[in-house]
Amino acid sequence: MEITKETTMGEMLEYNRGIAVVLMECGMHCVGCPASIGETLEEACAVHGLNADDVLAQIKEYLANEAE
Image (cartoon, rainbow, N blue to C red; front, side, top):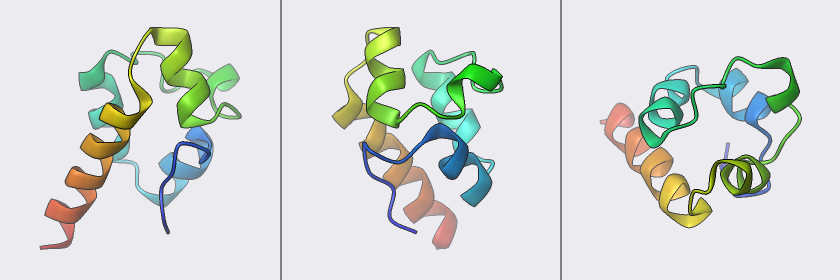
C-alpha cells in the first residue's frame, strides 16, 4: 500500500498498526479517536498544526525500516 497525504487515518492503521506510534511521536495523541479514522493524513496534520510532508516522511521511513 502506498501511503499519501490523502490516505485516511483508518486506512493507515488498518494497513500497519505500528504507524500509530509514529503519529503519536509527532504529537497526534488522538490516533484512536473515532472521529480521526475518516480524516486524511493531511487533514489530521492541519488540525494538529503539523507539516503533513514531514509526518508522511516519518511514516515512510518507519515502513522502510520495518521492511528490512
